[in-house]
Image (cartoon, rainbow, N blue to C red; front, side, top):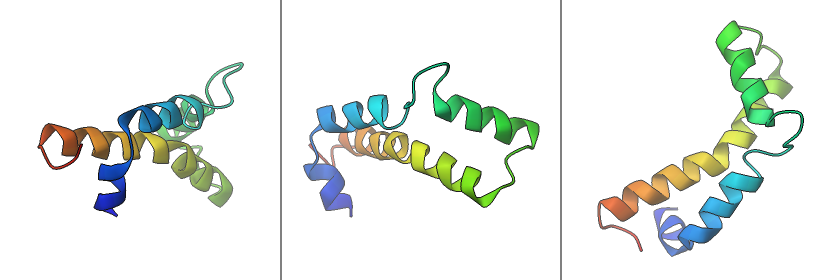
Length: 75
């Protein structure tokens, strides 16, 4: 799995986070709504939890990619 992260160009990870992670953009990014629901304790339905994880995945991928690049492990 880490090999896949290392082989993925940084630009692809940034594009994924900017598009998939934030979509839909209007009236607000969907992830903002889900994080607000999490903060207020309203994130209870399994579908909402899955949706939050789905929108967080590109950001987590980007964070791991950047951390591995900073550590010199990946290009």
